[in-house]
View 1: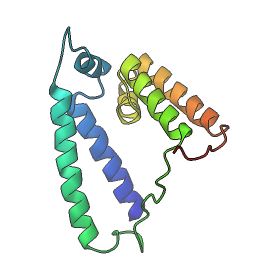
View 2 (view 1 turned 60 degrees about the horizontal axis):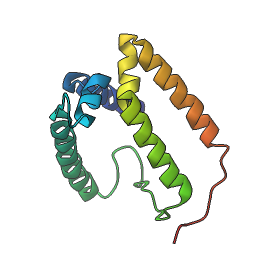
View 3 (view 1 turned 45 degrees about the vertical axis):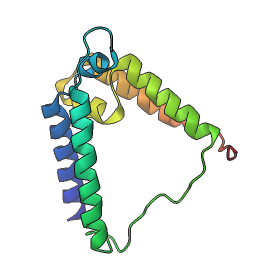
Length: 140
C-alpha cells in the first residue's frame, strides 16, 4: 500500500508541475529575466506550494506518526558546511543556466525533450561525483 501512495504522490507532483508549466525551462528563465521577458507566474506556483505544504505539515504532525511508518524521519543536522553551501550554489547556477531543477526535469522526461535528457544525465553524474567528496567540517 505504501508503494502505491508513493507512486500516486509522484504522479500528482509531476502532474502539478506539468499543469503549472514548470516543466518548461523557458518559464523559469523568463522568471529570472527581470529586464526582459519577465514572467511572475513562478511566484504563484511557489506561494501555493508553500501554503499547501505548511497546512499539510500541520495536519500530518497532529497525527503523531505518518500513515505508513511508526515515526517521522526528519533531518536533525543543523550543520552548515562548505559542502552544503557549494551544493546550494551549484543547484542555483544549474537552475539559472538551464531553467531546470530536478523535479521538473524528471517530470519533463515524458515529453522526450533532448534538453531534459541531458540535464537528468548530468544531474545523475553530478550526484555520483558528489558522493566522492568527503564531508567537511562545520562553518563557524
